[in-house]
Image (tube, rainbow, N blue to C red; front, side, top):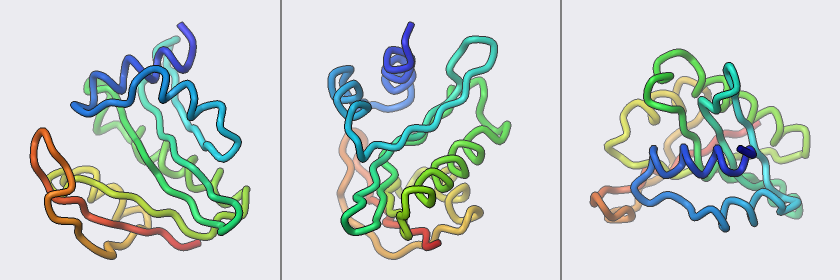
Length: 139
């Protein structure tokens, strides 16, 4: 399988509102896209992707996912650090993200890696309903 196929497979497993194969494929070919991934023994265990809007030096992290059997092993942190490094290399000086308010592990990961909470969007997520916590990281 290709990286895109592997990401799509893990995307469908990790998210109820997963991106379509075509959306991931199209996004991957976008010049502003930033992807990080970790393979172990030929298996994709996690990925992160987002976009750096170079004209305004801002990035947004859209997804970060780790397979269930590989969680709590530091892969999420490695993906986040790699994503941040790639953003910095292309001169993005701030990263934004949204995360489900009930996703305590993800929020803890972001806070422990320099992100700060900047707002809340009530009722942003559906299936299941949840608020979105808005966060940012400044270089």
